[in-house]
Image (cartoon, rainbow, N blue to C red; front, side, top):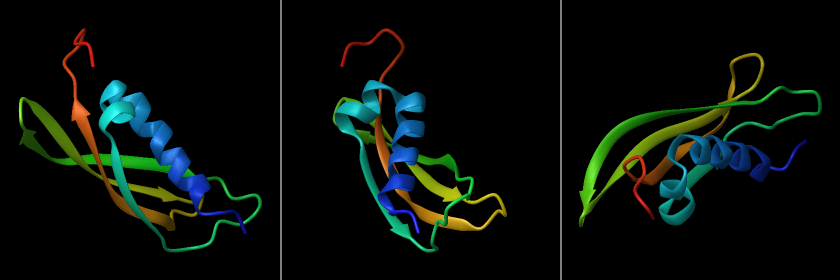
Length: 91
């Protein structure tokens, strides 16, 4: 059985690709590992922005995140938050 943090790392990589500096500098994540990942499983990470909140001068996206195996079974579920940077904006 694979360590649960492996799927959390996969979610983090997905969020880095989606939010860049907003994830790296201001990201937060809470996940629960709900099913085991076994050798040979193919795990895919997913995310969906569920809301956007003002946070001072910035905005923060709230996202539902999860990983599922090749059979469609969710193995990790949670919520992530990332700052939103405008294109070309320095962090």
